[in-house]
Length: 64
Image (tube, one colour):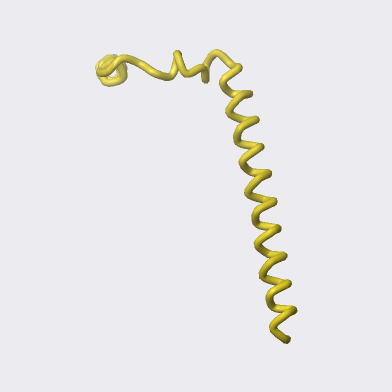
């Protein structure tokens, strides 16, 4: 295998990797938007005041 074929192979591999990277980025953005559209995944529901999660956990553990 001469050097020019090697560089063509390397370049093609990098271009294919970049294409997959772009497709993955687009998919993640789409998935994030679709999840945030649901009430359960809305950021204002997920973010809780400091200490609230521990209070909820302790309450749950005391009831079980």
